[in-house]
Length: 165
Image (tube, rainbow, N blue to C red; front, side):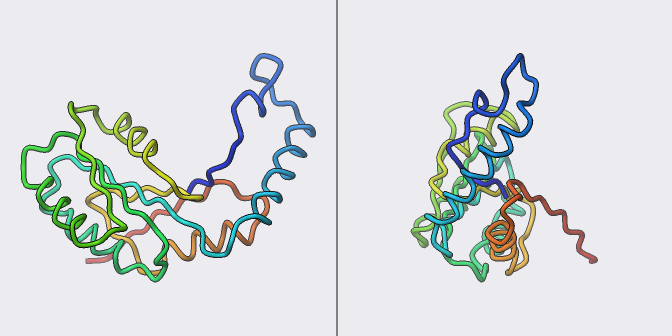
């Protein structure tokens, strides 16, 4: 899960890309603490899901997000010009739940450019990615959000889950 902030690359790196040591750390921690004070305990989480020809997996992936114990989220599904029924499936879910937004690219961007594109639609204080062929445990978003709010040093968290069949 990524924490959205107003940090800019030029604020963190000076002297031709070399770290500015303690000044950077101090600025970083001051900004994090300021944002933590302003943020409520249930901030909006943007869940980004990119898709390309995922009709077999998409319903289960979406259902796993909808089953989350953390309700204050937006699920942003960005289709990368699928040729199967991915678009119809995503549109159907978006029409039933206002937390789901569906965007369809005009041209195929490829995996990582499409992820960047999806991030541009996010409004949440936190951003996380869920692949369209993956599933979340019901507590995943709540646990990641709690981990971030309870740690003044954590900016990015990442988790990999392996399920036994």
